[in-house]
Length: 80
Image (tube, rainbow, N blue to C red; front, side, top):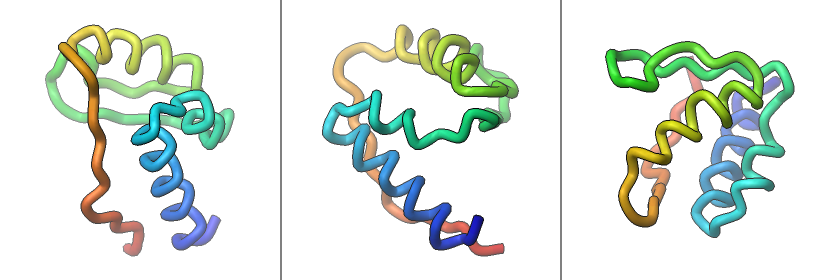
């Protein structure tokens, strides 16, 4: 996949989440996607596949947020 195509998908993901359309946002994920969150938080780790990302990362992570969640994409770098 080309850098510009990848960046367009990531941008679309943020846009869909910003309007509350999580279903459409996660439909953009490839079936074999991998999400890695580095660090030592309770949800840090490697998640393989959309079911793991949704159930094992986003589910527990979202329970730690009090109130509505707002995401804003300030800059997107995909080159290099």
